[in-house]
Image (tube, rainbow, N blue to C red; front, side, top):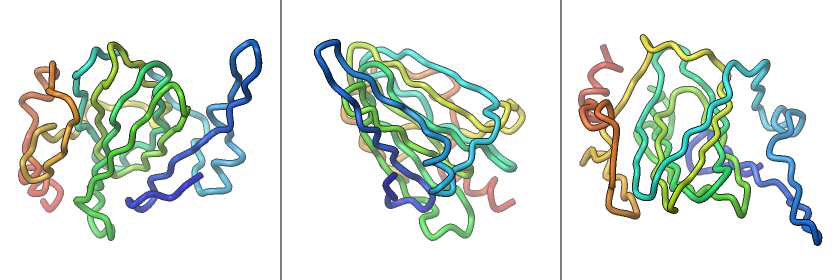
Length: 180
């Protein structure tokens, strides 16, 4: 596991074993994760999305306790983005962008208190999420993917976003909510 520039956000790099048949890799090991302070306990949800090239999903988060999620790209490649929204955090308001793909098998641990989103970089990309808390729509948070204050540089022209993401509040509006 590798620390990142955002406190608590970790990269998990497995070691694939290649042979004439192809490869095998363990994409998650609870014991190794716990050694680094990540305990998913009994996972509440395991989800997968498929997106076409240029699609942006996010930026999404949860209020209250939030949710921790382990994210990986099972097919294709994405630029995965995390924004720290934990009041009092040394990295509050900062973002991190990481390429996840089906060649390196890197997983990204996103602790509670983060916004998360990604852009598909390939014809299709399948992103898998292991989440530690059941989803409660009443706790949904979102910020526009193209908010000028966050200035996230998506590497491709954005080909599609959901209506929810297109009408999400600004970073400044979220800040006012967090401070209320």
